[in-house]
Image (tube, rainbow, N blue to C red; front, top):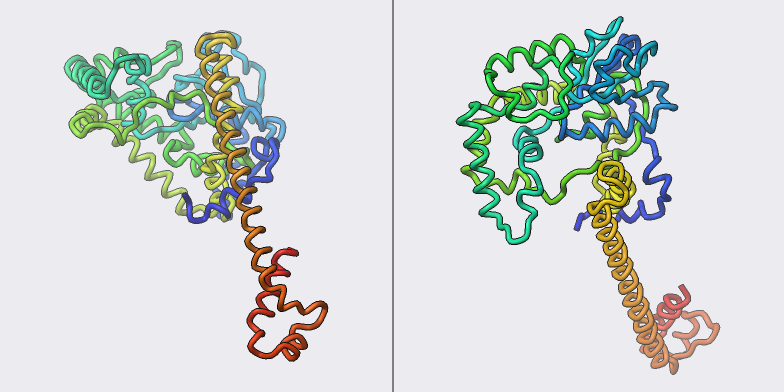
Length: 404
């Protein structure tokens, strides 16, 4: 349990639903990186999958009225159509889409991009290790890692690398709507060439590349740059919480992955260093610390997750699908069990309070012979003698304790 449990969690206990979900936090950088020119441009959010971009979309959508910056999220067909959803819309405007790089050539006027990158090992796990391959009856971790290692070896033999995030920042998708990027898309590519093109594109076309592992910091810097002065708490999207994590990787597989993701690692570290340099120049004061603290409050996270997950799961899989039914049943059982824990603790605390009160009253009854009535304790000691002073003072203290 956290040493500052009271300061971080208990003092948050009076928050209402609106305060937990709709509370805003100030984005005030005393050394602002704001760029006024961005207000005159159409901004593209190049949403690389499995990096947390849905959380940014969610905040931008919920804050459209306050910021005055509309967010358009077209599907791939709409994005390359002759009549896209943003036709006729003037800046400020944000367009968010997967595989969006190249859309700037389909608009008139100035534009710029921003994106997120994720630790390549975590990104690879999220993208390649599909839940239905190991969340199966009779499975075991040794078998899971054995099959995963075979996948890595197959990609290594067939393609030679698997730098998904570099590929997405290096490749134009102007006329190629792709519902999903797989290792097959990387066939015939060279990691060095991809890295050079990605760096050139980022330096020329991107005003910001954030990092998932520094999500709150990335959010504050991004909003500061585009002139958004407050933000909502981010809400978790529909992620696969039962997928093994990077920390669980066997060492031999971790090394193989590192070799496969060498270019992604170089690009990730390059952009993370840039973000860290921006943060070193920035001063968001205590508000960023408060935002990070609230984001990690387990009670807030549970509430926010339940508030978001049902809706996203229903929209993704259908409100009456088996997946949603299981999610709902699981959540109801969780809520019931938390209620049981609370009721059991309340009952135990009440019993302890009664026991504590009985002990106090027995001690006081034993001290009745030292009754001092309404007399001042000094007068009572003078009458009964100095030897009775400790008992008289103890009784007076216990009576005051009971009355409180």
